[in-house]
Image (cartoon, rainbow, N blue to C red; front, side, top):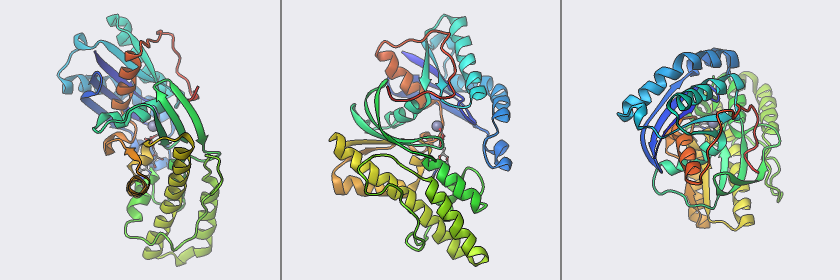
Length: 335
Ligand code: KG4
Ligand code: ZN
């Protein structure tokens, strides 16, 4: 079974071809970062318009790179939510159009389930069931994953997502968008203990996160520092912010692993690309004997390869969707 998958939930237009279950034949991503950077965030109207321009060339390139034609595709998949509604509809309708014209089955994939499937793109691959820490720009949560489509939420952020916290502090510092990579770069070699920033809900046995207090504390600290923030100060400040976010993610993951008595942890979403988080997870692996599964770096942020994996796993369970399946701006991941 070979799947053609399309992803267009936010500001990346992506297509991939995958031979089931995990043999990736191509993955093309057209990023709109330069379009949105001057605005400090994604402008939905601009994103939709750019998807319309990019989607067909991206699909063509994915097929060409895989050296496949539509005759060799068995299933068409697309992200059908959650995300920006105008953006979602572009990729979704193109996928449905191909499925309709070719008489192929269609699968509408949950974007976050796609993220959770990204670690299957490289060996060693996780086995179900596993605990998942999902850390993206719009979502942060811990999930007990028994199979695709069989997921329970154990805890989630009460306000900002981890990626959003990186982005908002980066904006305060004038480091640009997206902020996660900018903070990671600016933090290199910094003293993470120099600025004491809050780790919200710490020590509590619930598995929720909160990052809005960190953003406020960062703003107040920066206002106090004013012009006293020199290059070393900026480096230490970024390292301190990064450490506060990573500490919260690790502590709650450890609680969750104990609570569900699981030794497999999958970490996915854009923030999973963060090196400080990856180092902390490696330390967790050594100290607690946990098997940690991370996506290859290029599959942490939005891409269609992860959507193709999720579709292949759903296909193997017998899932098919009608061409009337809608685009959904909000759609809970857990049942
Ligand atoms: O998963 P993703 O590509 O999009 C969503 O579905 O949200 O995640 C994007 C988020 C952004 O907030 C970005 O700042 C963050 O992931 N991010 C990072 C890094 N790379 C991307 N955060 C920290 N460190 C990074 N290296
Ligand atoms: Zn995403």
